[in-house]
Length: 108
Image 1 (cartoon, rainbow, N blue to C red):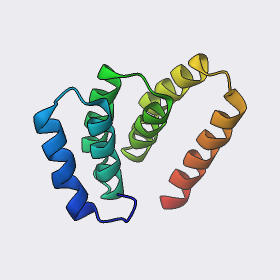
Image 2 (image 1 turned 90 degrees about the vertical axis):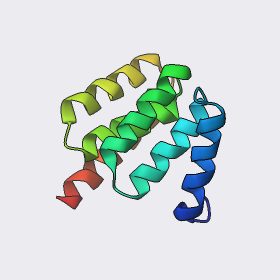
Image 3 (image 1 turned 180 degrees about the horizontal axis):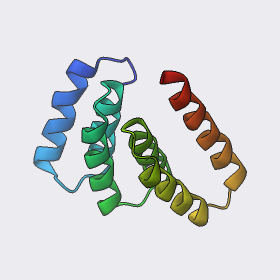
């Protein structure tokens, strides 16, 4: 993924998830691949599965971002509020949310 070789990364992640369907990191990386391919509904499913196995702020952020990109602003807002409620570093998250909302408006 770091080399942006998504066609090679997807089969690797698929093998990981076949071997361990409860791999939170595997679902997270699959979600990141779907986001890179603009397949936001698939990304939402992957991030949601990841969160079911391991609560993680970064995964929550990507889940909220995918909801926003998929034109589900209410769900994005709910995810972002939950993330803020659990975070001690609220200012950083507010800045990241502002960026994702701005980027989403620019893409319309």
